[in-house]
Image 1 (tube, rainbow, N blue to C red):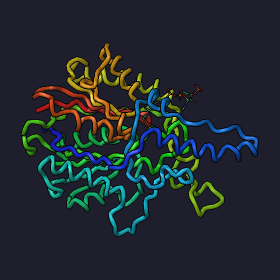
Image 2 (tube, helix red, strand yellow):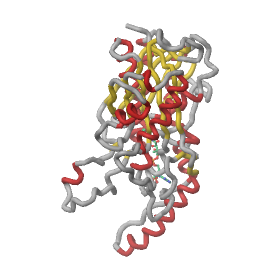
Image 3 (spheres, rainbow, N blue to C red):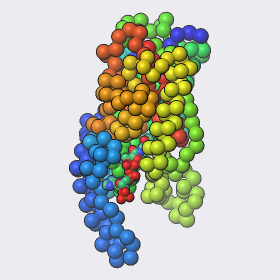
Image 4 (tube, helix red, strand yellow):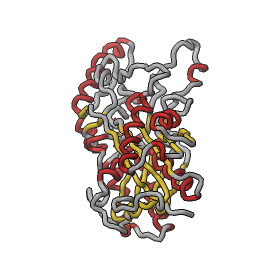
Length: 373
Ligand code: COA
């Protein structure tokens, strides 16, 4: 088995952002417009959303969005992303390439040095051609490319695959790309979820230690692990078979077929599963929870991360031990833990251990033990 490093990391955060107040204002304007009609039909009124609740329940204050146009318009509440001709780079590939180019530059390599591209994210723009192949083409890579999908654990699961591909000698240098364009699939009219997600794209270059520049500031990947257990508590039913279930086949209905979650069940069940997973995974690597200098956790909910760290460590973790980025970015699905890693690693010393751990829909958990070189 060869030793494996993460030689480059790239993060692309869209410029546009939405604060809780603006988001709630748009939601509540829509509720005000809906409720008279509901009253006339004898239906119960829709409840309003509240900024105070959002901050208290999740810790989220803002989220960045790929395309702001359309989201806050109560008559639309969906980003307006123009369709592109097949010859043009697709929106998802473009978002992925932006992060990929940064990761390649960080690793000091070019697309031609990559022999496998894995696109892994929560929502895919289309089934085929795989968006990974489009990215492979756009960056000038050769070899193989394929798409993966594992909810918020998408990047961690792809890192698990990339690590084992490189470790076994099957591939030399793998690019993992996670463009999370979630706002296109988010129901901004759903009070339970409208405030949760934001868009961001991340990429990692994973390669042999002997090939990578052995300069400080790179991480050796010591081990990776992936775990899943079926749950309906975070679900989307959007898919091509929807059309076959309708009388009117000219459109695919989105209402009722976007992201839904039973947040409080996810909260409790994932905390338990993640806590157990972290302790076992570290133990199997001969590490105690105290041996880990920093935890880069999935960025879904500040209270959730605080409780996981309290259970894992036995005391409250601070921003230094388990940094949060969700307050300004929201839940960026698979991208979140990688953004926390990218933004919070420069102060680690050679030999320091860190744990990247993502969790979410599936349920799924994915993690990597990293050691600063
Ligand atoms: N504004 C105001 N009040 C709201 C609201 C909103 N937008 N959404 C829900 N509420 C209300 C509910 O109606 C409920 O009111 P009630 O007590 O009068 O019935 C109350 O707030 C509590 O609702 P609940 O759903 O139990 O909230 P919560 O404290 O669990 O927080 C989440 C909701 C989504 C923030 C939280 O459950 C969560 O983050 N879960 C984990 C999500 C996750 O990790 N997902 C995995 C990755 S994708």
